Amino acid sequence: MITRSLLNTELDSLFSDEAPCTDLKIKIIGIGGAGTNAVGALQLEDFAAVRLAAINTDAQALDGSPITEKLMIGRSVTRGLGAGGEVDIGKAAAESDRDAIATMIGDVDLIIMVVGFGGGTGSAAASIVAEVAGKTNALVLAFVTLPFSFEGPRRQRIAEEGVGELRKLVHGLIPLPNDVLLQEGEEDTSVLNAFAITDRWIGRGVNSLCAMLLSTGVINLDLGSLRSVFQSQGGKTIFGTGVASGGDYVKDALDDLILCPLLHLGDRPAQLDRILVNVIGGADLPITRVNEIVSQVSKRFGSREDIVFGAVLDYSRTESLEICVLGKAEMERLDASVKKSKVADAPSPVETMQGLGLQSEIAQDKLPILQQVHLSKLASRKKSTSEDQDEFTFNEVDAQRGYFEKTDRNDYKDEDLDVPTYLRRGIKIKLKV
Picture (cartoon, helix red, strand yellow):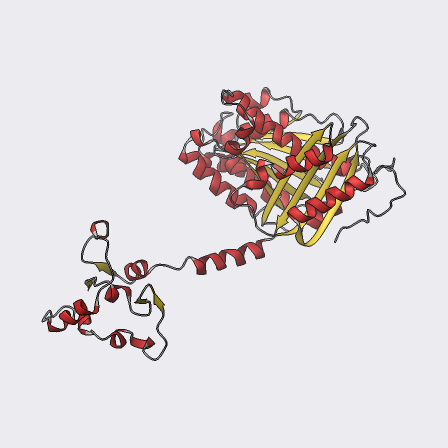
């Protein structure tokens, strides 16, 4: 269902001068070096009520940040230096200043964490910050950048582990893989500009969230709307934006949304439980085009339970549109999908034998490509006098089928799959004692 009807055709444009309540308390916290840099680069002049904060172990990096509210953690652990890429040091630093972190979080309604994973401080401290924030009534969302491939497998592993842990502690986690976002750059994009691309995506996400909650619109979204999508901690979140101006800007914005790289990540859930759609447009956006947007987004990103829709007025826009989509798949559905995949990925007969302590007499990497054993070859085994294995004396097909002898044959390419693989293919095995 859509939470607010869009059928009022008497309106020649979408927007009115209704102003939402602006006493909402939002705090954006950059954690670690990458997170602090990204938050420091945010352009939020239109949202004076939003407060920015930074948490880091590196005193020098904090001093150089334009953010006013800063917290250096782990003074007794790192003595004002960074964590040196060591997660244990970053965790110890955050643990030593839990009370200071709680004081910084304070009494807010929405916390947006921005953090880069793969290093020492951000990867470790983010979970501590999320744990502290979880003890408040705040809704907690996280934008997490993931390292470039060229940064090495160690940083990739740290990032993957960090995402798995943090996802359980926040209401919504939005991963931002640097490799994926770099697709927007040119072949000769410098390293500095590559990180700037990631910061711009974070800016788009944060601005979209702040605009939908704090800006004027006839279809206003409030914190309750956001909570209806992010009802519990855990699960997976999708986020995407589409932007266009001039020409057929509605169609172009929809096309840009569909092609958004963040909506094509490998771990994106196939089915969402709830979805939020927000459009930011000028006063010239007709109601009929809004119906088109809702229809197309619902068709592409439809959820099982609910679609929450909002629209924001930006007087500076003319023939311009931005669409923001946020969706959530709860942990219960993901767990069910994992169980289903585990059944589908059942171990092969060889893997089963290895798990039972059985091994092939010939090393697996030296095994020839084995063909189906003809019955005549099995018959010749009948005369074998070997004492360590006599299974191949069962030359009759029915005798080989064991417990399946009273069932119909399960044939595949002239092989009875109910006959153990090692019998069908003549593999001699021995038990490990």
